[in-house]
Length: 354
Image 1 (tube, rainbow, N blue to C red):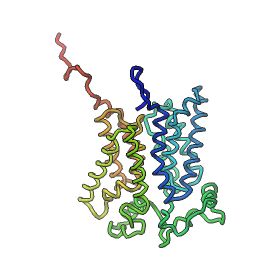
Image 2: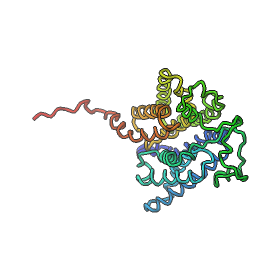
Image 3: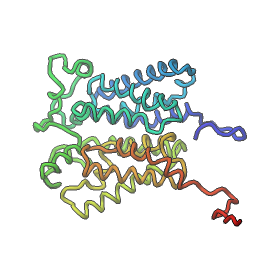
Image 4: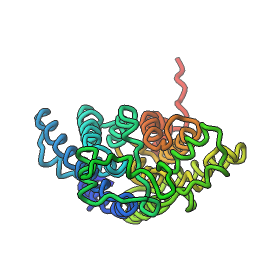
């Protein structure tokens, strides 16, 4: 995937691999922009700016070459993944803080590219979610359900100051035409379950008109398209995303059989929230994921199981970031026990006789 050994030359340099990931994320970014507006673009611009500047300044403080590190595009990919995960029109400083933390604390303090044990973008996201839960859950309604959409100038004003040009706050735009305060489909289900509602009652909410939530299934299908592109270009292998999605589908189906009234079904799990972004773009990070073939299958399945369990029983509606970080911690142990045997090595350690 990265630079090959001296005896075999490969065309996939680190910078090219990272650029391919950026290209693959374009359909998903376009779908998010279509359904949620200009805030998606503002988040991306802010994250890219702060990630690149943080990378450059930290490298200078470490007396490391700056230009070469920036050209590998790893900071760019971190910025894009974080920017795509943030709610549109969250305050600009949210994106800034997450970007700085992702690069400085989750990447460079561990030694930089190739040494970070955790996915930097998800570290930044989790920091923001724990520290600023209100800002991180203030999603706008998707375009088909929006009572009024923010123009470019109003969106920019909301992003920078928290108010539009007429002085209205973001909450004004979070109501749809039926008077509901909008949340993501997963958040809507999570809140409803805690209040004792059943699936039949919750699925009557306007956000559930489509099979996985208005807009969200198209966002996930767009990231799935990007993931297929990465697989076709051999930028990633199939093991992690496929095992993650299968584990999510199987575990959620079993949970639905046990309690169909207050558990999220397989289709909703797979095509809502950050599922496809997580499966193909985040979980497959070559640095923080498992590296063996069997290990990747275990790693991906572990993420899928954690996502379903946390979404149904945890305190956060979309659990991809937490699940990825938990399995990042387990990756070295998984690799240790799934290393293939060296050809010609004995199956058992020979006994030593005195």
